Image 1 (cartoon, rainbow, N blue to C red):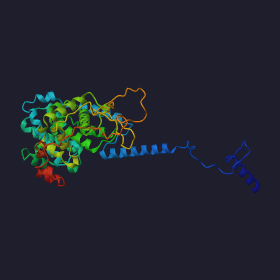
Image 2: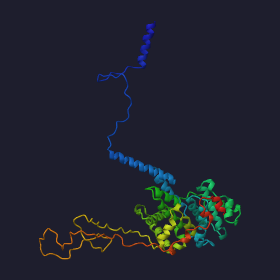
Image 3: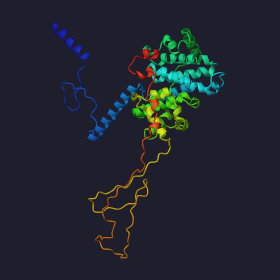
Image 4: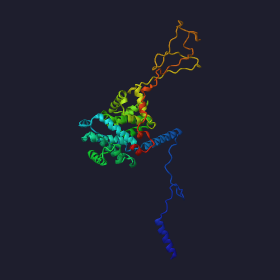
Length: 433
């Protein structure tokens, strides 16, 4: 009875766990082969390994720079995001023709309002995008509503309040009491709240405006990371465009590209011809003409702001360039290479004529020619070709003298307001002062 149960158990075990088939090669393994990964690829050369390492290192540095700038767009969605930003900037554009029809507000009043907003923006340490969004809200509101002179400052403060709530951290947003103190109690605290609701209703609560600062960050980080000085000069030029009427009709992307193009020229960088659009030359020409002819008419507050070392002294750099008579040029003259001189140790040297600094210098003929068609191989006293020469070509004869003291913008380099001078102080205390 016991054997029958054992045989039935073995039979059922064989059904559940069938035996393995014998190997066709006559070899059976008692253990399983461990699972291995795919076969290794071909052996890489040290050069390819080093190149791959450098590419990965550059990619990591590029991503780290994008994260520091707050701009990190995945390659999969990059084009979609750019298309959406172009669509939104067209949708949130203002109309200068509608602003021309205001009964009381004139264009010469705009620099006063922008100068006031720049000072408040700098005093509260708000983000750069906040200033551009503020002016966009003001322009869109003025394009649709009639604004009187007595309410012009109130509209600007309400727009700054809205933009700060949208872009900045909560602790940096100014309060209603601080806005009322900045305006010297001209408006009640309830007036700011009422104007805020009226402005938001007029622009239909559309605040997703791609500012010129957002476009500049993409342009400075996408193909390659721009130098810090180039970015500061471009930001200074972009804020200049906020003051004047002729720049309102251009999209923020064109403003950022034009300012970056001019900034790269001022800093001695090559142009990005593959990125330039049709509107880019127009913006560069407008900026260049205004800085060349009316450089002394720039906002004193704006120039003071960008005269700090934190902004690479961009304002001082640009002002000195145009006060010295510099102008933008689309075709930069690149000098031809000059023929290098030979050292005096060498046995032969060719004298050269110094007629041009741009073209290679050509050798001159000896003073006396010999009528002998087969001259001797030994050098003679009259042969000037094979004698060593101590001539050194002059690469650049023009020396740029330092500008006189009365041409330098000394009055722009000293702050008068404590809110702009005390960088380490509290923005709240600075705003009240």
